Amino acid sequence: MSFRKIHTGLLNAYCCVRAARKGTVLLISMIVLAILSAWAVSIYSISGVNLQLADNQHKADCARACAESGHEIARYWLSHVSIPGDTPLGSRFSQIAYCFQTEVSTISGFTPPYDSGSSVLTIPAVTLDSAKGQSFSAQITKVDVVPETLKLSVTGVYGSVTKTISANYKYGVRNDTVFDFGVATKGPLSLAGNIELEGANVSVESDVFIQSQNQNEALSIIGNSQIAGDVTITNPDAYVTLQGGQAGIGGETGDAAMEHVCIGEKPPEFPAPNPAYFESYVLNTVDSFTDTSADATFENIRIEAGTNPTFSGSVILRGIVFVETPNIVTFTGNTTITGIIVGNGSLEDDSGVNQIHFVGNVESYPVSELPDETQFDGIRSETGTFLMAPGFHLSFGGNFSTLNGAVAGNGIEFSGNAGGTINGTIINYSDEAMTLSGNSDLYFNRSGTVDVPTGFIQDIVLHYDPSSYSESAL
Image (tube, rainbow, N blue to C red; front, side):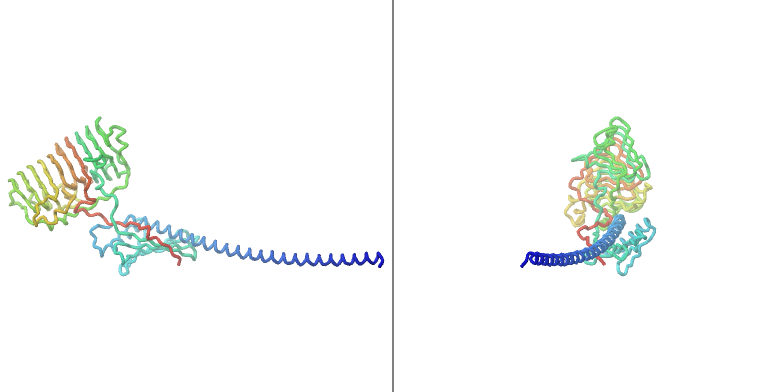
């Protein structure tokens, strides 16, 4: 074989191999292109799904945000709802509904409809953003399993997507009351002379609360008078007057004393007195024919309206002393009380027509020390109250060692040398000033006392139960 043939054969073989390589590269390229195309399509599809999922999630989040906004609004409205504590159990939800309607109508101008037959209170759709289709609606229902609970369900809407959140609200009472203070008055407070308000154990027992919504001079301290505790005032425009080098608050005088005054604070609850609670204990009557001038003992008495008696001897009072209106009752001698004095006046009566005066000395003992006799059964456990007389002006002008319980009336005055220990709170329901003058030292002992003294009714309010929170999609 010649060299030429060999060369030609090799050349032909090389060309065949080269052609085969080109075919393989083309095939591989097509396979790679197919894989990349499929991957691109897959990526596109996945991206589309993710965009759809993200859009759905966004709408769901917006719907939940609408529901949460609605819940916060409804929760705010519910926080302003309160009903009298003596409301019968079967009427509580309807009273809650009525109060809620009033609250919402006052704030927003519309009244949520209430279906008494099904015990459902409805908040119609409230628009949050009309351009985006954002709104919420709500229902408040009574939970039958637990009568002391209601359920708030709020549905948020974003376009066509809805989200509902639910939570329970339990019936309860306010956490802060005037019984957290030594003195609590709806009107201003005036101290003049050498008055000292002190805590029997710690200074906070003599803390003072003043509402004084109608008068800007909420507190006046003149002379050498002192308040050992701090002072809280509701009226945001209120001011305090200190006259005299020793006039002080919180153990300090001058500008330093004002560091113990908080102005513009939210008011605590003034529980309503319920004199009728004690009327069932009354067994005997004091009228215009009863001799109240001699030394005598009275047990579970009713002082008839218009009697206006003066107890001028050394009188012993046991159990309940129930004073009807109108009346002016005066104690000028030495008075020993093992019981509770009750006046059945009105909280709105600041006229001073009804009065109870203690001119002489007072000696007080707790009801737990009443004799073990049937007429005092039940009364021995009615602790925490010494004098409850809404609509009565109360005045103390003599000494007392201890007043065993809260003192409440419409207008309260301590004068002369009246002073001693008070095992409870002094409460003035009147918008008129409460005055303390003379040389009195009042020591407030609130250690170990009951949260709410007997005969006082706290309003029922609603407490949010966070453990009941739940979400659902519709």
